[in-house]
Image 1 (cartoon, rainbow, N blue to C red):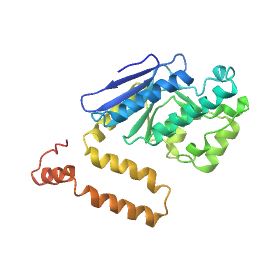
Image 2 (cartoon, rainbow, N blue to C red; image 1 turned 90 degrees about the horizontal axis):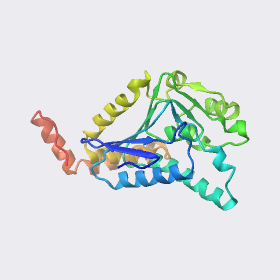
Image 3 (cartoon, rainbow, N blue to C red; image 1 turned 90 degrees about the vertical axis):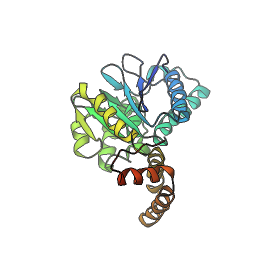
Length: 254
């Protein structure tokens, strides 16, 4: 399942690797966003897919929005482009299947936001992150970045356009690991495979709870999680997991 601008490879265990493929810097224009959203729709509907890994070709993960294309848009086109941008971020943020970003190089602007909308980020040691929109008189992205960045760091990045190395984002807990570039994708896929072997019902329920409880006060969020846990305990997957534990074997989830 491969398009011109988006590559999709699905492993036997159910890990889908989605690759941005718009050289030289994988800038996000309307066509690549449309193809990306179509691919995400296909993956959402595919029950064989359990986890998604997002990566890119070349030395840059994503340089953000295609500024040259933006300058050619009419008012009507601009509104449509904004909608596509929003839908791109939400397709990642609201995915029922975990999404892991394997950031192979620079992640700028919308590219950084795409990574931030994933459930975890693995980045190359020489990767960097930036919000350079301020340098072309633009802005945006705070709604998503404040989920993973301390407030002062988010403001500094957006107001200065400074490039921040992956080591610094690891230090503040914004990314999960930073590794030599050749190890980033294999590591992300390895973690994805671990998740893919878990109960798909439990994974998707937990995934849904992440989005819900972050909007709730602590006691309401935990009450909701208890409700989810009660319902999960009655599923076939939960019964299989308990039986496998008793029999000291690996669980076989449907």
